[in-house]
Length: 365
Image (cartoon, rainbow, N blue to C red; front, side):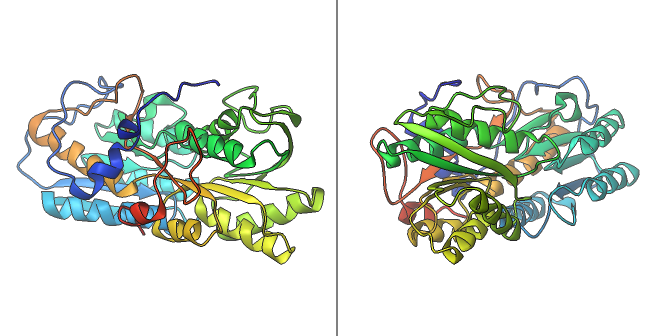
């Protein structure tokens, strides 16, 4: 394995226990990039914050917006919402960052969709805004003050370990349905590489998708990777990607997907091809995805907590402005870990998980 997975179930499910009862959060100390932002100290006027998500076509980001609005209302924050037209739309996010600077916002919460956006965030920090990445740690660490996110590598490892156990020694013929094919984004790479590592497959460059050996052995037997196809995190993208890989090899029996919309699209493609016996795994844990696990469409998913990310982000900026308290990263990490839990109704020995009944009580969307 490339990364340790010895955390206890309680630690790894921190978000599941706290997301529904998020109380006042006291942040102290310094963030990983604490020297940049000068927006500190009490303020008499309203605190302006912009939340900029990748797209509003994905329930994950809709839930994030809902969480931010609730937290902003409670704290008296003036919240501006913005989003890309689709996942990967850097231009719209850059415009939203520029707008936040020009109207004098105190902070930005953002799920950055690419490197050009990070360049704009560097300018925002230089202008005195406190910048928090949500869900997607940036490639350029200097583009944000701190990140609140799922440990995406661990989430990938969870579904990889579960898949390897579920196969019980069968050959794994794997379809990799990633986010992008033309750019490197941390959430994409970490989930992909984490999944392979969880399967026991040696990764080549952990910062790059698709360069591992296409055949070899995983922890339970032999594997073959049919290919990596981008989905843009969308249902239609998942369907097209699955169709492409099925045309290369109709014997696919393992389908890794970047998120649940892509997973459902892939399922539709396989079903249309008369295949319903493959193992589909994903990451998100939205209410629709949890139901798909319950219905047998997805075998297992790693549940993350976008509402908590947004609530923490809003509160962090409020505490920074009013108290001068900067948020800190989680011990041993360069971001604040908002938690992850594997969801499945087919638990495997040695793999911590919760069932769909429990997951339904803490899902989103």
